[in-house]
Image (tube, rainbow, N blue to C red; front, side, top):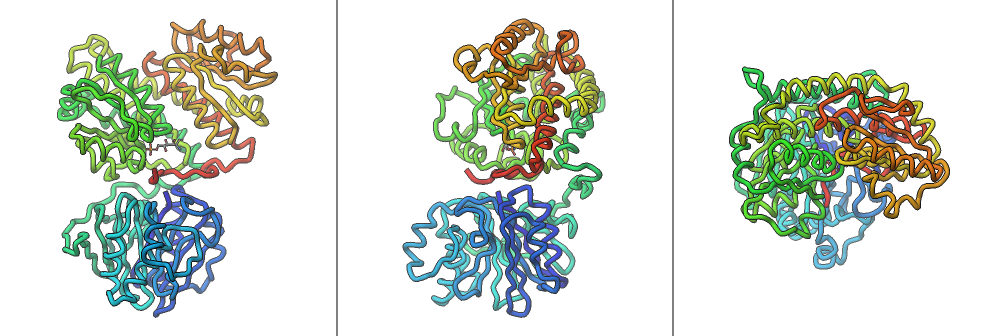
Length: 602
Ligand code: M6R
């Protein structure tokens, strides 16, 4: 979490930093700050709250051709002015921004910095104080930073300015994302290319353990031992207009609306010249050689993984287990002889998933990442990668990435099944079925008025809500509940509806909202039985049903799609429900409290 941007050039860094931070705000929005270096004077301004609050506080005439900026998601110390970045060493010579978690910061403080005065509760202040200490002991800034980095345990992306040197900007990274943006007569560093796209489309990766020294015209990448590393720049393919809201009031609504187009883009991206859906042969071979697939993911990506298991098992007859990343790494189940690990991650930066990737790679297992962000950490570090082609997802609440993940997993499942000669896969014209899904999605995104009304009726004032489903609808119920709680702060749970009577039904009171999703014929009557049970106990119940299964009292009918692909359509009214519930309750839809888009700490 947290976003970093830094600039060195021959214009005012202020605007570059504020514009960059705005683009990085999805990474954290507890507090923000910038530092500008101008002729050996450092101007630091920071503010609790959003980038807009910071911008108001920055003096109009603030100037510096070198600068660093930060938007924070608190890990050490509460969100406050004191804990906001940048942080400075005692003398004020060094100023630093940092993303990540330094696990041994208390030990370092105790061992090296007994005499130093600390202003904040952050681990970052320890890093910047260490640099100053080693400079005071006689090292130059580069060596002092190198020595400091060698002592750190944990994750970091940092940028540092030295008041006595306005020709240099320092940066380093380990396990937290950071990129160099290369320009003519200037250079930038940023946690995400999006923050620097206005300045350049040329980027250079920084690898873990490396340190970077930027001047206006030069980029020097150094290994932990100080050896120079040559690395070519690549051209970023993100379209700057993709990261704008356009006429939409919120990114979330824009991203919900993009789902039919994303589904069609996925079909095209995975089609060969003959119009057949294909996946690279080495990926298929790696999975076919495995005796079990372990899907590793968090949050919404985990929910997509549950649907993916269903697809791969039904269409390719390969056993699949789905695990929450943060649990798997520290309590591994008994593994089969030849497992393959499939990481599902929109951002490709999620630390919980990455810790599993690192462990299973050490154990010698094959890995595949399914991500939306080419060049991200999990993309680079896995043996194989597949992409979502969903375009940048900015809203914290994931929507189009979820449906893109399921669509790509369906393509993977069907191509695996075909390789194995499984009839269910051979008989399925997936390109056509996904096209039908895209049309159904269009109908669902057009149901805004109805869903807004339902959200007002069921969710405007409630304390809690329940989503019910069975089989694949249960997985969508879990996703619907996550979406609702994360942006509307309503306590919501997704249940396998048959399980309600085993305890949870005790929570049903008069007017408790219960929303049931019904898309599978074989469980239609079971789930309706469960809905009757909660109605009998006073619940305010409502059913979203697939065309062909609907009953007169159902509130929303989902156009018919292939039974294995229903989640792609049924999730959309649930996303809209969460969106409108959040609006009814005047919540900040795109930046819900306590959250950040990219979760880069464990
Ligand atoms: O980038 P990832 O897919 O790895 O992120 C995983 C979760 O943090 C993410 O899906 C989160 O649950 C979303 N905010 C849910 O809307």
